[in-house]
Length: 144
Image (cartoon, rainbow, N blue to C red; front, side, top):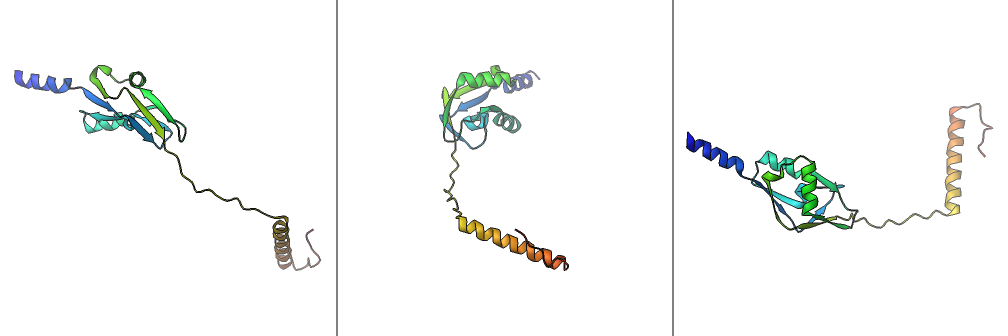
């Protein structure tokens, strides 16, 4: 019985380990713990919960910002994480960058005055034809 209690208490004393990465790239508007660290020695449910913890807003697209270990500790403490059960290893800071969204340059359509006048004439003609066909007594109707 005593052996069983000792084994159980050793398992419960095992600390979760956060191994901080050197760099991280995010493609969302926030930085989550899972973006910047690997969660080790935790059960799958705990790993998922910790990976989803939001640390801060992501840097603007194409930019990089540094998150220090003290900032991470402060945020985790604010989120209610018991830091005495957590070991942070790896880098002392993480460089986080936002992925740039590559878009093909779009050419703006150039509309000439002649194109615009032709479009207006087509719309006027279509409206006039529709009104005349819908209302047979309005043969003298025209748009100006």
